[in-house]
Image: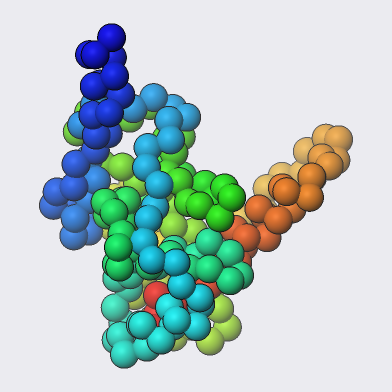
Length: 194
């Protein structure tokens, strides 16, 4: 029984130098699809405070530890944060971010093998006032065949072929979550440009 408990408490990943960008998070053991790996932690601040903290930052610097939770809250992983802040972006990720009860978790979307770098799609939004070189500022270096070349969503998302299906009814919680994700994409870019 002690071995089972200790293996559950063993860390899922270790932070070390990454070929993608700076430091990265690398699996120490097999992580099954659906596993909640880590919570993204840091000081919870308002959007105004996040902007204030990063206002002197060079606009060509894309490095940030800000994660937008909703229209009122930003997590600054650079202050009182944990190792989740080192999980890099990828256009073909093995993880995703999940916002639940105003908390952010990183979960595996497929089985991850030991030594593999953890990643999720940052899904940064675009704004009308973005600088002309915004794609270069937020360049992606994931190296996958499906790489967009940027951590930003494409200016125009590709249209999917329409397929007949029954319209899905969204619950109020699902609508709030979808709105928060849209807000996250828009606000993260604004906050991180500062």
